[in-house]
Length: 263
Image (cartoon, rainbow, N blue to C red; front, side, top):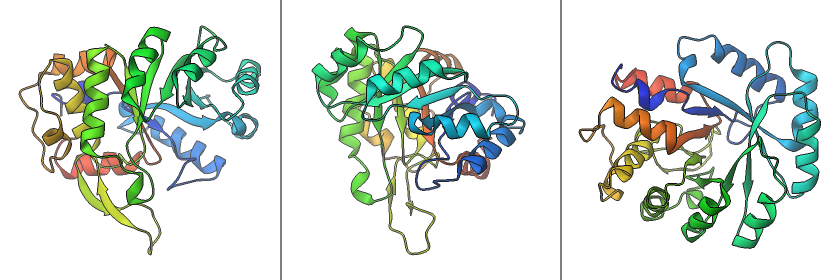
């Protein structure tokens, strides 16, 4: 466990408001507050909330406010103004773009104290993100099989981020430590599919940062191999490069790590 702690510390941004959990605000807040005092609290990072639900979050909080990553919607300017009015400790925002012009336009409006993660589908935009002083974000899954990118796509994203020294986060479909075939929702009749493991993704990031590859076999591995990486490799990767991943479940990652004897 001690060997992996630098890889797992503050790793999970709790996104219980989002599918497939899609919890009511009060339930998501209660969960987060409970996780903050659990033995695994050291793995917990930010609470992810859409800006459109900040009113609801502010009205529902009863206790210490979580550190927040706010998800920007279609109206960037209005959402940034709403963030500026919030009494909550929002230090990170997440937004989605499709071209370089949108990155430039967004960065001209984002307040300096906010750290932006820019979700992209095209790794060619990573140098633009780096030049703008932002961080990248990759979507690694969803609630249907077609929402999961290929291992080649994820590998290219990580490799390009490493080459351009661009920090990133991941989101969606990373409930489990290792690649596995699982139900993609909590519905009894929902679809199943292959999911990437969060250990696979962050191990691949640590290897990419050291110039080692190829990454696709690492992303597709169904068993754990630390590839000779040291706790110092994990610590520096997490601090400066592969920052966190968003998950609508905190308990599933913890339970799976424990079942594998890694926690």
